[in-house]
Amino acid sequence: MEKYIVSARKYRPATFKSIVGQHALIRTLKNAVQTGRLAHSYLFCGQRGVGKTTTARIFAKAINCEHLTADGEPCNECESCRAFNEQRSLNIIEMDAASNNSVDEIRSLTDQVLVPPIAGRYRVFIIDEVHMLSQAAFNAFLKTLEEPPSYVIFILATTEKQKILPTILSRCQKYDFQSITPSDIVEQLQYVADSEGYTTEAAGLNVIAQKSDGAMRDALSIFDQVAAASGGNITYQAVIDNLNILDYDYYFRLVDAFLAGSVEQSLLIYKEVRDHGFEGKVFVNGLANHFRELLMAHSPELAPLLEVTSDVEDRYREQSAKCRLPFIYSAMELCNKCDLSYRDATNKQFLVELTLIKICQLSGDAPSPAPQPGIRKIEKSAVPSSAAPQSAAKTAVISPQAPKQQAQPLSQSFTRPSRQNVAPAVSSPSGGMTSGGKKIMAIPSLHAVGGSNTPVVGEPVQAYTATARNAPYSYGNLLDAWRAFVKDNPKEILLINTIKSGDDPVETAGGEYEFVVENEAQRDIFEKKMPMILDYLRDKLNNDRVNLRIKIREAGVREKLWTQKELLTDLIERNPKAKTFIDKYRLRFA
Ligand SMILES: [Zn+2]
Image (cartoon, rainbow, N blue to C red; front, top):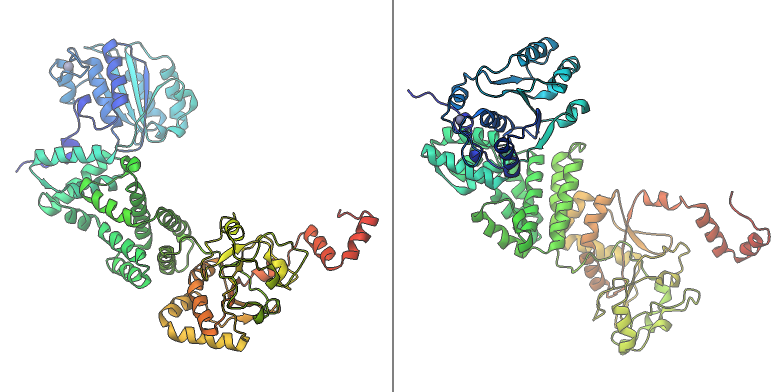
């Protein structure tokens, strides 16, 4: 029976040309060999599996080759090359510093350095994992590195450049090896597969390339594993089955569910994933990566950053076309947030589910996140129901320039519908939407109209049209309407209840209504549902001014933590005489 050799060894490159990736660096090395301008010591840095040792060996072979080819490759035919290929060369000495890191071992190496080459020009010492040398060994080595005999060349290799003493770094010519790109890895895997007579699927090889993280050696050992398990039929399915990798099909389905706003569907897909034994973190990372690919598939300029094979590429483009960019950005952000909090979460499954729910909410067809949380209810008393005659102007809006001090009844701020009045408000920087029909317009500075003495400056306030419905209602009516909503929308409530205790809205001292939630996450989800709840309540109560706030429980405490300046401003606002007093005595806070 033929002896089995792992692909990483069997297909180890024997020439510069067959090294995968690292093109610029190889060119420089070849050039050095051809021109004979060789340094005494080289340092090859880079992550594992990117070809440092392989390159060092080929470089060493080329240095001693008697008949270099025209393009700087070792001939593999001369005595020196053959001796090296048959591992009997006395001129190329390899040492693994990971297992030979004592002072004694370094001493024996430095002793060898003193022996000149028997044949050939140079003795090349390759020291792998050089950062593993002990401090004492480093020091013993330093002397030799400083003044090596003319026939000696050191090639040091390391995965951890930062651990190398500066005294050593400064004496070496440094080469940084890059991770190998997925497409280079796929190409090499295809070459090996063809040589072995395996059948392959591009998608399968691509998954291996992704999984190997830029290391050719890892890619080849995964490749061997799958080839052995699948009898040389390296399909996409064989790869994901063998490596226990999440099928990207889940993610395509999941994003479809997000786009449909289907919380149920997305939670069910996640359950499927869990049932297959995948950890939440793996799942979330995969999802984050899926959104990344969707982003890259969104525009032709970003196409080079797509890390998928061409057959899946079309699928990404197709799905990406259905996604708006802000949706992709926010989803990426949410995935990242979930990933960051994953370790600390007590209930990890809940965290992932919450993330999925939030992503579902993103896909809503609202053109921009509605400024619901800050919306304050306009005091009922400020607008007597008679002040909004149904026959009046269709689209009158409250002038954003209404001076604060003249706390006029709202009805007086209404203006006749004219382009001049409507247009500036529509295009105002306050982010209002077109005020057609019952649409909402955010206008700052309106809070002064209300009776509350704790205005929150800068918060958007709802404006409404003169045709707004305005039937009077009580807190009791509101509660009834809310409970009817609960009854009519069991699905929505199920969602809200999982994040909130499901309490009724409460009436505040200022005559406003609010829901109290425990944290920002709850608020965020609740907020997304608010437009729908308000629509319902407004219809039920026949009043377009019905409004509800969402308050985080701690917020009440925080509100009281005013700065001294705020306290002073508040004092003056409530008691103008205080200002005279303060000015007169030039009082200042210390
Ligand atoms: Zn040769």
